[in-house]
Image 1 (tube, rainbow, N blue to C red):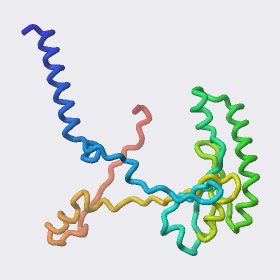
Image 2 (cartoon, rainbow, N blue to C red; image 1 turned 45 degrees about the horizontal axis):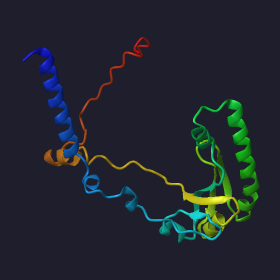
Image 3 (cartoon, helix red, strand yellow; image 1 turned 90 degrees about the vertical axis):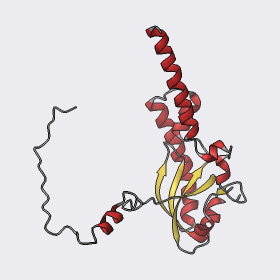
Image 4 (cartoon, helix red, strand yellow; image 1 turned 30 degrees about the horizontal axis):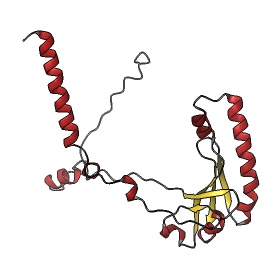
Length: 196
């Protein structure tokens, strides 16, 4: 077999192996044809057309909550994507000023509900982040100009100790080792600025 035929044969075999490996590792949900959108529950519609996109547990409590009231106009990044080109700094500033004007018109209505305005977004989202009583969320969603109320999620890192098998190692040692008598040294020779 010539070297070019061998290379062709080898590439066909590797390609077939890659396809088989990809098919074997495909998640069962994708292989079964399950639509990922079915994992989500439709948010309830509020009169006035705005969506109150919150978990029921969040909307039922009497305490304050931090949410984002999304407004109707497209943010800067969406306008840029629709135009299919990079916007100039002046164009971005013009869009930002327009969005800030829309937000300024809604802000007094939000504050009238007893909410505190925490932040305003114009780049990737046209919205206002507010702290508001949970029983006022439906009223917030009904304000003119508000199209959706979104929760602000606080993400925390999961404890990875069990994932790396640390408890099994601790159990295997009989719980005798807690770090007593162990010397730890750090050798630091400084920063080598020539490393790229």
